[in-house]
Amino acid sequence: MDMTTLLKKPLQHLSGSGIREFARLAQEKEGCISLTLGEPDFNTPANIKGALKNALDDNLTHYAPNAGYDSLRKAIADFEQQKGIFYKPEEVIVTIGATEALFAGLFSILAPGDEVIVPVPAFSLYESIITMCGGKTVRLDTRDSGFQIGEEQLRAAYSSRTKAIILNSPNNPTGAVYTEETLDCLHDFLKDKPLFILCDEVYGQLAFEDYRSFPSYGDLKDRLIVVQSFSKPYAMTGFRAGYLLADRPVVEILEKVHQYNVVSIPSFVQAACEEALSFDSADMRASYRRRTQYVCDRLEEMGLAVRPPDGGFYVFPSIADFGMSSDAFCRRLIEEEGLALTPGSCFDGEGYVRISCCYSPAVLEAGLNRLERFVKNRLCI
Image 1 (cartoon, rainbow, N blue to C red):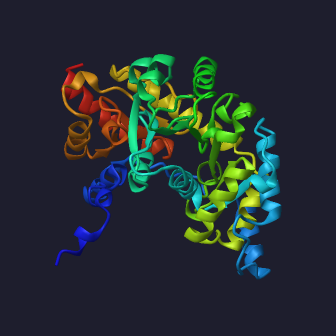
Image 2 (image 1 turned 60 degrees about the vertical axis):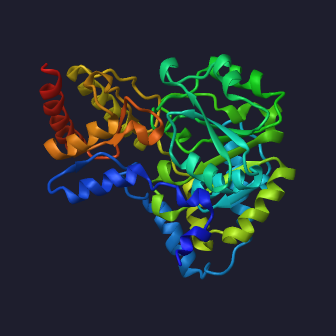
């Protein structure tokens, strides 16, 4: 008997990560340079590792409170308040990365057939979680609007089945930050709609300039779920730590999902997270800014259209002039030049490719030299 037929049907058609697929193809190609993964090349800062070691030595290895230690929740609330985002410690849940926070939010919101608006290009994780929760992804395409959102687009995407919208700024993969015009448009359109607004803020601390994030609209706090991660700004990807913020009545429901799903995150990891909140990511941010600017300069020299990112460590150039899909472009690039990028199709961003700048300047230069050869051979520059 084929027991897979008894599994949930949406899961049977769920595809694996395209990002991981192209990272795997790079590993299988001898000498291939991979600019695929968003894995910071920095090591975790010494003070954060020290806090983890001290916690272990102090035997902080027992069960922690479901939502996290009070000291960490207070530190998170204080940290967010500095950014104009106001939540009480009891409105914080410490999670297994941003992924669990997103899952807890969407699982709590969605019934079968409910819709979630996702501005695309977007991280593919969103659609996968929506599918696992029985929902439907409604794509709001931003490719022709400079990766910004307007009222007409929102009206076209919204329906009576809409239960949530996901906002990600700075965005993965585009690096775009929502402008004041976009934020005000979103606020004006969403303020009287009965839906949740999930704000994925994981790249917020890597924005190159000061910017306003959507959760600063305090009048919408009752419908906001703010998602954050320790992975990117502190080079803590392996710690699998993040948190969510929500209004007290909502967070009490989300905590039940969190409790029955994972219980809590490891006790000693929470000590490292509390220490991380005192770390200044300015040097990392400046390094990523230099790298992304170098990549954009090289791409423009090659004749590729690219919008410089406002934050994060991804660059998202257009390949529309090549007459092939982004998947075909990236497969040929691996085969012919030994360079792996991620197709835009992995993010519902066909016509583009994503270049990760989480690699040393030397690796970036070598990879772009290979891309330049490939481009010249195709465009006869």
